[in-house]
Image (tube, rainbow over all chains, first blue to last red; front, side, top):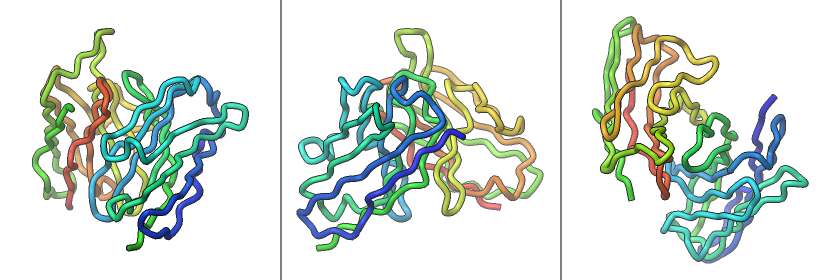
Length: 119
Length: 111
């Protein structure tokens, strides 16, 4: 089965740091771009960041640029999101998804992990 | 950034009726390879998003034939024929033609 599993969500203080991970299984991980998408409670979907299959190219939403860093370890089929300087508006469920820009990906999503930033 | 605008925001329907969702982009979504990277997702209550349609009109594997996508350039439509109870939730369009990837605000389907 093709699966994505996010871990790392937690309650964290304003200004703190947190690292999310996404573990993939059931497909050739290094051939797909991967992305993070978040959803605040009761709100819509917001793209956060993407990384190419090789890991050489990364992309960020303006709202997280300079604070979040996306990375991947193709030897371990994992993708990570290092989140620093967390703010109240970073509180959301974070989903990892298989896909990037100009591709037919995005058919595989994880179940999400909740990040709550407390002030 | 490309702005994706969905309408209506809420769509009440009766079981067995059809439903139509609109999505408009602020710029053409035609990519240089000739493809239009416009996707439709359904998010049921408490669930992760599930993609239904990609590249405007291609249906994902396992998606009911009741779902169909159409449109071009900046104007797109998702249609559901014979709405069933399991179709409730929010429907999002998403463009991945250009960075940053952007989603519409969603349309809530209510039975």
